[in-house]
Image (cartoon, rainbow, N blue to C red; front, side, top):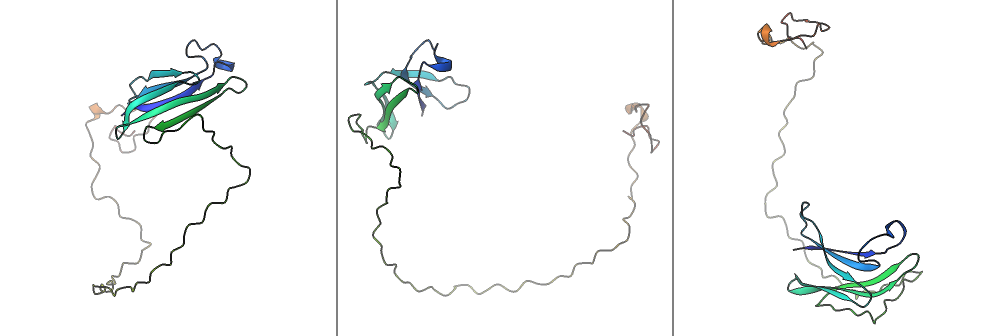
Length: 171
């Protein structure tokens, strides 16, 4: 499936010199793979519609440009919907209200009471207690093996380095 991006290409301010699709709503399609290019599949003016067939479950995705108002700022009123749930530019969406709208209260159902059943398995045994050794303050033991030493021909010590082990490889 493709990804669809919709933008209002307002030719004002920093992008006033945009060469194509000036002051139009542009519909882009993209595969979703980062290395693929996106393509303009529709440049719409007021009153125009773009239909992307077989969007989801054989339904079409529809982009309708209801109105474009050029000004500061420019505004495009766009509806995006599926063919299963059509919308109309002729129906105005109510403006947001300043105060919250009281939500309808759902019908309250009284919960039914059920009895909890007793456990079906016997409880597990109590954990066994194992004793750990208390920490000591004795110093740690010296290593038991001497470090392996490569042939001096493989080592190139810098003249400013100290060769504490005398192996020619102290880096």
